[in-house]
Amino acid sequence: MALHQEYSNGLLLAWPTPILQRQVDNAALLSALRDQILAREKDDPEGLPRALVNGWHSRLDLMEWPGEAIGDLKQHIGDALSDFMSMMTNGRHVSGTAHITAWANISRRGGFHRLHTHHSSMVSGVFYVDIGQADPEDTRFNGSLTFVDPRQAVEMIQLPGQPFGEKIKFDPKPGMLLLFPSWLKHFVDPFRGEGTRMSVAFNIAMPDARVADAGAGPSTEKKSP
Image (cartoon, rainbow, N blue to C red):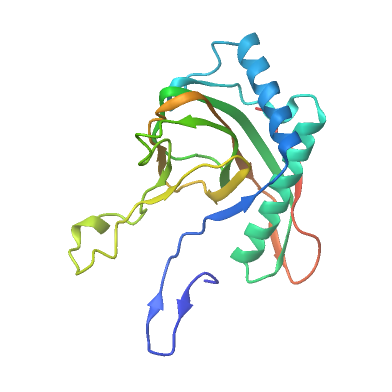
């Protein structure tokens, strides 16, 4: 498989797990998305019950929302997906239509996400719109996005330095965009601070994906919930 890495000393690093990070520095985009998400929460305070605790989860129609900001976000996701797929295929282009389902999350003090995966998708991701004001006296793992080692029973193996089973944590920043395999387990630590921690999460499916030696990267097409 393309992701395996074999070295001259006979060592094979098998089954690596890809996580792609990008940074979108666009204050106007973040501000517009923040206003839209807060307005949608006001209009639909119930939202959808999901793995988010002490927070608000929008319905799964964010890509259908009006406004230029949604189109801009969709473009950034599509660009990141093209990079992600190229890395997965040793630089070969992937053709097909990417169906994106997206929703907004709002966490206030005490809000967190339980451990979960994203079923029926290929790639999932998150884009951070606002991170609120974390408590300066309690910054360790404050609202961090945490990925769990997916290898079954990996923590049962005791080796010097504990090279296996380590969790990977990302401290959110406004404009941070992450893509990862939908099967990768993850959770969000409780947010301890003031204001709102706001993100857009999304799932991507490409049922007609094809790998070729040449051609355009994946196009993006919104998917109805």
